[in-house]
Image (cartoon, rainbow, N blue to C red):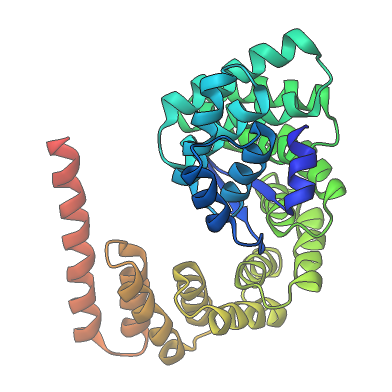
Length: 334
């Protein structure tokens, strides 16, 4: 049985996020009780039944128990590709990267000998690419993701991850192409739409970025990141007098009061609008959230100075100087 069928059977969704796989789970029954029963009878259960339970443990994020079962199966079926894939996924989440890589590469070797069109082979290439990305081998990750897409052109994870890989290489044209494809495949996937918007913005395609941010907020009106992105873009396009941009930033802060970026951008915008006393609250909070970043303190000093509070401005500027001095010292030591 392919991993695709297991995922459908267990309602398992695997999403590569940078170099980490996040598994969103639903109830799968009393898996723990089954596992204890199986262990008590000396793991004599059929390997297919055990494999299903190992994937159920993956689903609930119990990597250690999953790899115990997968490892046991591999003692008698050392080159069974689905088991190797599952074990690799569990090991990867346990930070055992080298062993995880060995498992998935073995699975790829077996599958390539059997068939080049197996959907499981595409899944293995995606996982192997994520491992390569974690090991800072981005070019290798790109090659593997392209192989996955060649096998399964509609593989969402492969398209999305390839977009991220190109984004990391600052290859924005290719990143846009694969993020667009990912959004076509999953039109309501927040991360895919958000990456498309931010990539279009960075590439200078403001119209596409604006359209995409608006789509995010149509689908997820209470997304702080979506409101932040829209607000920043509108202010960039129309200047600080964009009422919609200001409202989007204010909503982002309400939705997530501890979002540093929203606080700083809103503070800077309010300074530009000569609303100095309002800006102080947000810049002070930003400084509390990320005290090692001098930007919020620098902007706070501007707000104080423009509102006639020279002593407060001078005090904050001393913090800025201390942060810069600390950074210089750290650079010299390294």
